[in-house]
Structure formats: C-alpha cells, structure tokens
Amino acid sequence: MKNTALTHIHEALGAKMVPFAGYNMPVQYEGVTIEHETVRNGVGVFDVSHMGEFLISGPNALNLIQKIASNDASVLTVGRAQYSCMPNEDGGIVDDLIIYRIKDDEYLLVVNASNIEKDWNWISSKNDMNATMRNISEDYSLLAIQGPKAVEAMQSLTSVDLAAIKYYHFEVADFAGVEHVIISATGYTGSGGFEIYAKNTEIEQIWKKVFEAGASYGIKPVGLAARDTLRLEMGFCLYGNDINDTTSPLEAGLGWITKFTKDFTNAEALKKQKEEGVTRKLVAFELTERGIPRHDYEITDKDGNVIGIVTSGTMSPSLSKGIGLGYVPVAYTAVDSEIYIRIRKKDIPAKVVKLPFYKK
Image: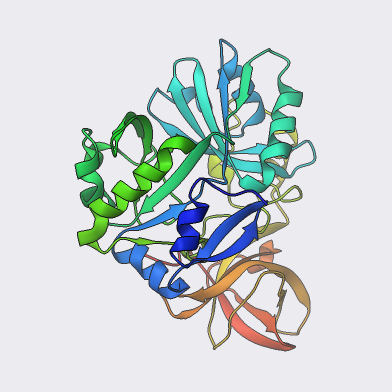
C-alpha cells in the first residue's frame, strides 16, 4: 500500500484510513455530512495526491493528445485546462482526464489513480509520433481546496489574484511560500475553489500554511467519502462506476466532450453511434420514497422487470433524499420518467431528474 506525502498528517488528525487505488487514503475525519457541508458552505481540503500526472511534450505533443482524447485540445491556450476522455477501440472509455496546456509544446494530463499504469500503457501504444512522455505521478502531490470561501481564504498565500482565475483556467505561480505551483480553478465538487499541484517535498509546507490561512474561515480536512457525495450531487461521472471500458461517452452523456471536428481513437464508430442513436443512457434519479440507492442495485420498471443498474447512489447530504445515476433504455430517460430501485427485494419508486441534483 502506497502512502501520500501527507499520510502521517491524516493519521495524526485521526482520519479513518482505507485502501483506495493502491493508496492508504483518508475516507473521513469528523464525518461525511459535516465534511460535505463544510465544502458546500465554506472551505475544505482534500488530499488527492493519488491521482496520476503525465507530461506530454515536444513538437508532436498536441498530435498525440488529439489522437487519444475525445475533446479538441487544439483550442487550449497556455493557462487553460479541459475535461476529456480517452475512448478505446471497442466503444468504451479507457479513462476520463483533465488536460492542461502548460507551455506551447507541453501538456499535463491528470488521470485517475486506479488507471495510472493502464493509461500510461494505452497512451504509449498510440505514441507513434515520438512525443516525449514523462510519468511524474510519484513525484507530485495534489490538494483540492474547495468551497465558496476558498478564494477569500487562500488569497493571502499568493501574489496572483485568485478571483481572476476563471473556471478551467490556471496559473503557475507562488503559493504558500513555494514557487512554480499550479493553481487551477478546477475541482470535482461543484462548489468552486482550486486544485494545487506541487512536489511531494513541498506539499507538507503548503498543507500547513493552507490551514493557517483558512483557520478563521472554518477550514477542515475532507475525506474521500464526502468527495463522492459532493461529485454525485453534481452528476459528475466516476470512472469505474458510471463510466468504464464498456460505456460509450455518448451513452454517458459526455457528447459535449466528444468532438468529431478531428480524428481520434474510434471516432468513426462513435460518430455512427451518434447518428444512429444510443439504445441506453445514463440518467439521474431521485427516490420519491425513503431509501438509499447503492452501486449495483437493480433498476426496474413498474412491472418489476429489471431494466438497468445503479452505477452510483447515496443519501444526498444537501437534499436529504436518495439520489443516483444509472443506465436505462432510452424509453425511460425523459425527465419525470418513473423507474424503481430494488432495495432489499422491495422496488422503491424514483423519478428521472435533470442534473445537477444540487443547485446553488
């Protein structure tokens, strides 16, 4: 089991630690609901250093990225980031990722922790244009400082105007006494804030200064459990649950990051799927009676026929009701469609809703 550079701090704080993607990670500190509400209303900090980082550089860096990624990275200028996915040859998804344009000919790819080796091998297999690739995952740490008070709480730590960094833009600047930190206006919570990339040797200093600066704002450490409830309330896909090697980006509602203005892996088949229409789609649903939907619970119709499977589900801390995502046939995807979630052999009624679940 690998540790992040901050594992000893989480343990000292009394975090409940769990194995996740090969890492020893904090799942919660005070409790999921408290941590969730801290991010929705104030500012919280996640150690997400288990994520993978690849540097792709050289004159053919963009060519390689355009080949592997569904979104159009040619629109990126230095200082901008983009959400994308890597389609496989069979209609599914290798992984979803964020692409940062660091310099004219250098890009940072941030991938899911459980897929680091798989993604590296996949991109390497497509690199017939000799782009330079570096896997820097083991050397870098990542903090997600999230919540509506993040800008105000962190402004004293940097010379850049944090409020001026637009969503999915970033600066490479000083932060918490460290030079050349990536300060990115991204995150997977839907409550604003930043993601901070720095070397493992620098991250403990940053963590301490972040908590000093945020003390008067009620800053708290937040674990992976609240990260999951926060992202689910926004309807953000989690790789391994809502998207995987067998789900197409179009089925998953990721048509907006699938750009047929360029050629990429399996583009022809996906374009055909778009033209012909998909047979199933990922929908968001809310239970209309008491109950908590969970991953892999069956979705049924009114007659009890199994029509799909829950990919993500929880009791929403913000809405105090059961919410989830799941794949169902297209006939059941319209908003307000009635479906049922099988919980302990009982079919609990639910309705299809429009994302996000949580509206500010």
